[in-house]
Amino acid sequence: MTPPGADLTVGDEVVVDVGPVAHGGHCVARHEGRVIFVRHTIPGERVRARITEGGEGDRFLRADAVEILTASEHRVPVRCPVAGPGLCGGCDLQHVSTAHQRVLKAEVVAEQLSRLGRVDREVVVEPLADEDGLRYRTRVEVAVGEGGGSPFVGLRRHRSHDLVPIEDCPIAHPRVGEGIAAAAEDARGRELTGIAAVDVVAASAEEDVVLVEVPADGRTERITVRERVATRAGERELTVDARGFWQVHVDAPRAFVEAVLEAAAIEPGDRVLDLYAGVGLLSLPLAEATGPDGQLIAVESDDLALAHLEANLAAQPQALAVAGRVDDLLGVPRKSRRRDKRSRPPARSHLLPPTADVIVLDPPRTGAGRGVVEALVAMRPRCLVYVACDPAALGRDTGTLGELGYELRGLRALDAFPMTHHVECVATFEPPSGRP
Ligand SMILES: C[S@@+](CC[C@H](N)C(=O)[O-])C[C@H]1O[C@@H](n2cnc3c(N)ncnc32)[C@H](O)[C@@H]1O
Image 1 (cartoon, rainbow, N blue to C red):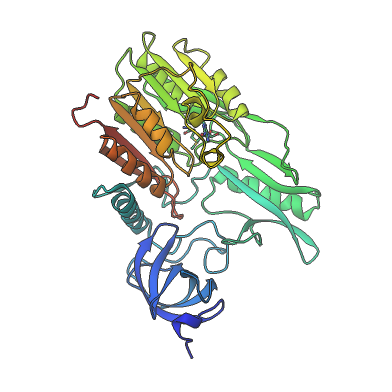
Image 2: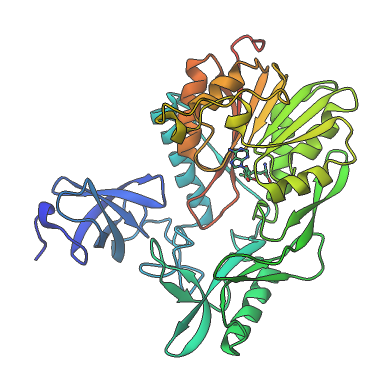
């Protein structure tokens, strides 16, 4: 018998009609007034959902669809033995056709922009160059575990530290797949004693796949790999730490560079900022576009990424790599510091100019935040290009930009993470007249 909504707890099962998709890889269902976020289902389905998290008094419950009673026309067989309820937490959407995955992601982006950014806009998610959303990841970290006395490599279950053993991963690039198989072999041969994880990296300008063994303290030997990127000016090579940030989809570097250059419409001589620059994937083509009479200032807070950024920009005399956090350099109090009345906001750095023609920013999942957005608008750029890996953060910052007179003019949404709920957006903001 199904328990009443108020009494639902972990392990209970309820039959629900599944409503719209929500941000985070699940859909919304209701049972006697309780909101349940159900994974492994599709809007319009009727499913038996098993509660996996939450209980009495919680605002919402989490659940897995363990039996599909009425299937959506968009449902397809999963292409991985460990995709599904209770298994690997990596892929949220293997059970959905890739075309419909993009429809669902577009709905999420549109909903976040509308609710948080107060902008109503139709969104289309574009595929990158991949076969059916498979074999695209050039980086996968597998954890090393032990089960029944036998060591193995695996991936984590959803919202858990438990591991699901794997021998391959269908979204991993073929070279990464071979690396995972080799790591699994090493684990079985007890060659990974004292190793917590193995980072498997297939860099585009390296012949061999790189396996970085990560001990429990996380301190690894520094290994530099080379990545090749096609820019308007030709093919370029950048260096990056094997474990450092690099876009994971094999086609993302090309696609993101193209989308940003198109959105930024740099003119020779422009003063351009590239904030949260990483090793300079966007900085290098932006520097080339602004040319010898322009200026490119790239900001990055991670020491190791900064060293690569400096090296990757070395041949561009108009480019400057600045070390530090964007908020600190702009004189914006950090969120955590705001509550502490004794700490004063940092002084604005003289390394950042008072104005800029174009600002590109690619912040982490938390977004830029109100303080940084206000400081950027004060620089009166004619165009602000925001690369966003989290639609909710983009929605919040879109709202702030709108209040300050910068309107969302262009939006590209790119399916850089097929089979998962993640999506990357390149949003362009301009003041109404085009001139601040
Ligand atoms: C999403 S990555 C983007 C990197 C680059 N645009 C790319 O596509 O390769 C964000 C980068 O911002 C850096 N970062 C994170 N927080 C930062 C902050 N507050 N200030 C400056 N850089 C930051 C991270 O170290 C990381 O390299």
